Length: 517
Image (cartoon, rainbow, N blue to C red):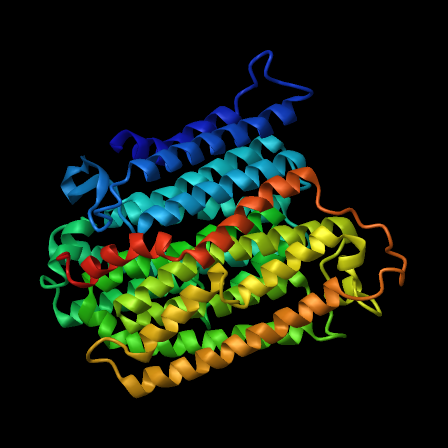
């Protein structure tokens, strides 16, 4: 188990270096480009297999215990250690990350985005995978920061070199926002580590902030929270996200929404809730307020983009929907209750699966029509996908109803539990304020249903005989292979939420209790 977790974190880096080397004779296939893309599928597939093996070997009777630990001294002068481990909070995120990277590599093998060398594309993809997996596996504050930063450069190049229109401006906006947030976050992490005398996240969580004064916790939450909020992204620090999603290639959008946004909310749960509980209690009402505003703001922005005549870009619309969905995650965290935090973690996974599928589908639409502009797609009567490409239309409708939180699908449970947690927040938090946030969040769910149903009506319905675009290719074999796991897991998590909640709940209970089960 120790070896498996270390292998999962380190192997993508080795695979990235190997991708830049010439392909061995006999493995080139039809071309060197095909060989390196096959290499990407192989490496991400091996990582996924190792993560599945780790999940099977995980002691599911003790999900609150840190397992598969590696703890080696690294920088003695700063007391920084290479400390890896996994529990019920991080295991689902590791598994989802490995799955999404494998599906993106598989999709890219058949549909590589236009850009420079495929070798560079695969190498960057694998560096990105290593950084995201490490973020969910490390248990040292400085290692967490390094892993958190490791993803920025590869994502910048994926947007800037393989993206669409306005890709340079979007890539610069992405990296400037996230780097500025990270600088502030580093100051907060150093403040905690120096004051407490350790950067070990397990020891800090067990101490539950007793070594940190109230003012220190306030400063730490403010500094670290800003960096995490930018990555989440929380309104009003979200403005980099729509541009990045609109310009990014399809797989870039899938990974940005499915994995990178989760790094911010994971930091709130793993670091701020257990290490600085007093500071979080002070800021929780404000975090809840920003979350509630983000829910409604994201939905209203999507409604505006979905309206006829507004030339709304579908990728941009789904990006704004992420602001709303991540608002529910932040609201659950702000409640500081086991119910709310479990809802936040469930919503994290549900959003990764459903929004990843939505970006895959919109990327397929853009490939077929040459645009993601909703007015162009819908034309006068609607794009009529049900008639022209029935499987593609059915999948888009499925992803939309999953995203709006239909009971029986994954999107329902996380948002419902987040609202339940906010309905009865932790002791010391203002219940009238959180009841207001619950009301605003519930209104946001209605707005979410409205804009997603408008999108389905305009894209899936209409007269298939009207307009010049009569021939639209339906779902291809490689698309079916890449999308089916996301559909299946969305249904599984919706029908059997105990699979995920059984892992997260004991770990959350222990985390909020200061390391005591």
